[in-house]
Image 1 (spheres, rainbow, N blue to C red):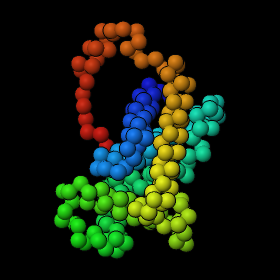
Image 2 (image 1 turned 180 degrees about the vertical axis):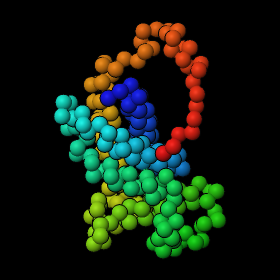
Image 3 (image 1 turned 45 degrees about the vertical axis):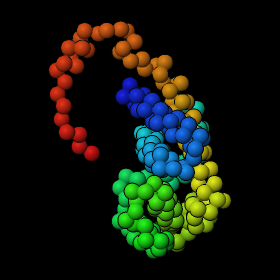
Amino acid sequence: MNLAQLIQVGVHWADLVTVDSHFTATGIRDVEGCVHLKAALIALANVADFELKLRSTYKLHRGPSAVIKPLYKNLEFAKYLRNKFVGHIHSDLVGKAIEWQPALRQIAGRLGEPKYAILVNLWLLETAINTYLDEAGKHKFFDSETDLLYPPDCERFLGFLEITVRGSIAYLKALNDLWAPKLRSDDDAGFDLELAMKAGMTKFKYLAQ
């Protein structure tokens, strides 16, 4: 692991701790909760991608590996939801949501009202959950269709979210505890004139994917 990766650990960690605090306090009952939910899925997908780059280190450092391995299936599911529901709203997802919840036709023009914005977000989310199928049409994560207005289904999803968020926090903490003492930033030594001069000559360029 290098310093840039350690900084990524800190960013993902802070994001997940923040959303976990919100979910613990209020869940996803309001518009703010929906925004935190989307932030959680983005952060979890980032952890999924980031973790792939670190697997070569697990041979020597098995602590973080032991924490994250039980979450592989959860993180793949979170990544799917990020891609279809959050990263961009997939047009096929919206079409299927209208089919699944015909009431969307009546409230499509009223999304400026928080109660309808929450409802539409939940319907889009549950549609994304219900499209997570294998080639045989079997659900890949939950064992049945999800209706987030049905309390047991909502609790099931929130349970998945809690386990995945808190497990990822534990993983990131394990990485930080392992690598932070070994990768001290240059700031630890105080002001560095040479680095300050280099900073002033920084040239920026467009970052390709």
